[in-house]
Image (tube, rainbow, N blue to C red; front, side, top):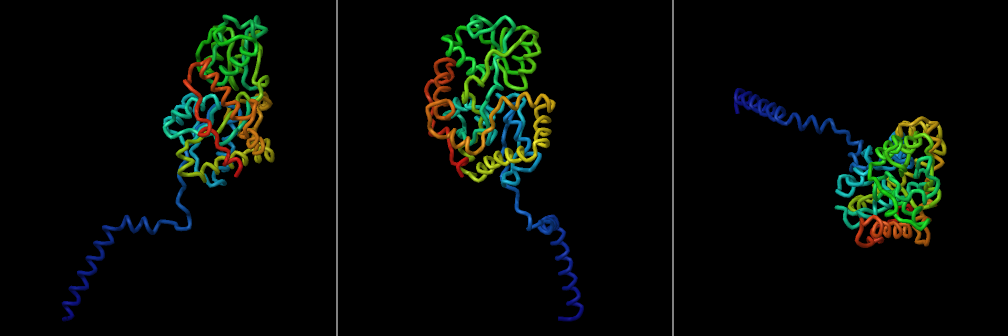
Length: 341
């Protein structure tokens, strides 16, 4: 090969190399920019929560990076309307949600990906209230009176328990079905005689002159457990993420004990209340640690045990609210493995 031929070949090779580099530049740049020391992001878990004093605490995990500490990548989604979060979980738009046992039971056999209770956040211990006008002093005084509440949810159940305890039923009162915030406003304006509400909405109800608390969840221990519910699909496909969510809850409680001022700042900000107002709500909820959870998941014969509470709530759903035709499969409903691990 002559020198001129070599030069021509060398020039051709340079042109081809230049062309290939140009064509593949984006791919090469992408490869070079990858930092192999950083692991790829884990699967995002979409988790819903809403306006309840026991669920405000999840913002601590968000602000203090406790989800990351437990190896779970959480998209924490706030719902102004609690009922929307229930629908989102049952239709598969969420992987996990904070909801009551009352609102979970009807979905056990209906949800697209199944629904399973894996954690008790708390029990309502006074924060759910029936607030009444000044002329009502006993449960019997509610007969034929207008009571505003969200049908089928916790304060409806609370009212039903109180009526049954006094030989009455839901048929003895005039239920006005309203979202809880709207129900509290309707009561404050004098449009109804009583309201069932949880915080912060009963603060609005108590603005009505002469209004007062008639009964609360304090009178019915264990009747309103507030839960973390996940899909069966998430348990099957990513049990480590479920364990991470459960472990994060116990880390939240630990953080609150060690950093009470910072914790209260975060919670009050999420709730949209002052830290002074927050104190009104804290005594009305019993937060559940690991020991409380293990006890709640044990089979028992009173409302402090989830199996018994589920049965009583199912009876309410079937006989009083007509929301169920039969009791759900409780074996699917309760999974204590994650609080025990």
